[in-house]
Length: 535
Image 1 (cartoon, rainbow, N blue to C red):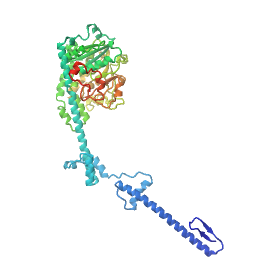
Image 2 (spheres, helix red, strand yellow; image 1 turned 60 degrees about the horizontal axis):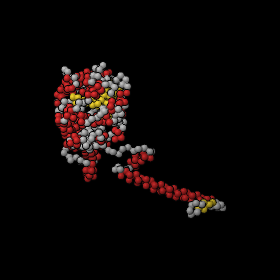
Image 3 (cartoon, helix red, strand yellow; image 1 turned 30 degrees about the vertical axis):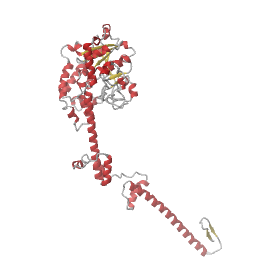
Image 4 (spheres, rainbow, N blue to C red; image 1 turned 45 degrees about the vertical axis):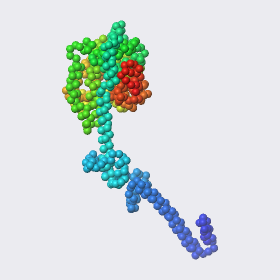
């Protein structure tokens, strides 16, 4: 047998005729051929392995990892990857220790080291100094804490400035009140009887739609009244009872005398004009006197509240809002006396002066109250989680045992501002007495049961007496939620500018203010004369 191998190793041929010696030579040739082939393929495999190791090493170097100098290290690197496992974190443990320790940056800041005040300064410093992991994390944490404190200070300053702006009376409104008061004194047309004598019986006629508005803001009251009447399908059936205080009565009367909303019936009365209010002791006045004394020493004033290092800007904002004159005003408390103020009426809708009505509200008289007294929108559920997420715990202090023992923190809250009141059923309850009892308890506890406005005692007094109405009727948050869309607001029956960004202030949200301003005639001589601006 003879073996013939072609040069390209593809063809192998055997030939007979030779002895065992030739066969032995053939065996030796095959062994050599096999050895050469194995060496060739081993070399190719080794080249591929080197290339693979080079790529991994380059990637590790780019990631900032230390290059492996041993086979064991390489196995630890390659093993998890080959098996499809995620390798452990390469972040040094000391970084986590520093970031988790609340006092870890104290040494750096107390030593007087200049803390980087921006990310770019921090990056430049790290590139120049090339610090170890602990120093890097200390400097990073110092910078973050510094920037967080700076942002918190700026936020509190904003809250304080908004509080000052919302608590003051704009010069335009002050001018309007003065000019109208002077008009009331010098112009008989501004002193017309409201309502007209022939309309007087409508004031106690329960077949009409009765609304009540308590306000000492002439411009705000004019918008509520105009939006109510303009959007009513039956304005001749609308009766609006405007209640104001003694100092604003002349201006309010002059405005509605000179700006008729016929065929609607408008009544303007000051508190002293009500028989009930002038008889004996009035609980609301006694509470107001105590409330003023308590709030005069509450928190040491706005500057002291704003300097708090332990409370969040949101809590500070709530405390400042509690000091707002609005919440000390008798106009805000008077709603609890509606059954006494209107003894002949069975049902009415209460309106705040910071709302705008955008549709006919007569269907509210068809709402079946199911024996309840207060028809209101719940504020614990809705697509706007910031506005519609309010429960009792948001208004009452459940760390106080008196609150914790009597109320459920997760009970749903409801909104003041547009409420249906069944006055006939209300008179059969002790709601007003409960209201004053808890006001007194709060004053005795130095305002520690709650701090904000009349809604907390209202939540307590009307507990179990609230009928939930559709959220369509009352959209909240336009005074503190600038993310409210125009389309959503335009589709609500009533929009409420609750919060500090009132539409008549410079702090109003520009994209929402036109919804309110559209009901003001900026060519009116009083509006124009006092420079009330459209934008």
